[in-house]
Image (tube, rainbow, N blue to C red; front, side, top):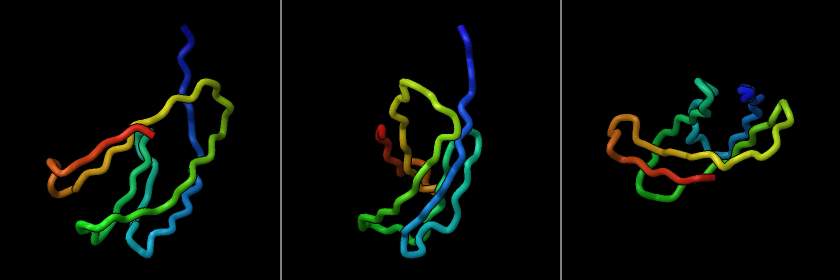
Length: 78
């Protein structure tokens, strides 16, 4: 079995009306930090550019949580 690691080059294009205060690529995760999220639907757009060709790419889990209240969270697969 051959194991290899995929390195992604991030190209972040955020359209968020100032809600995303920071974004980073850390430990194979993309992290977004948002401010003033309260009870109404919010959205922003980002793109990730793959630097190496990889076949059979699988969906990845997405998790959203409140940094100060870890019990408040949601997850899905994209």
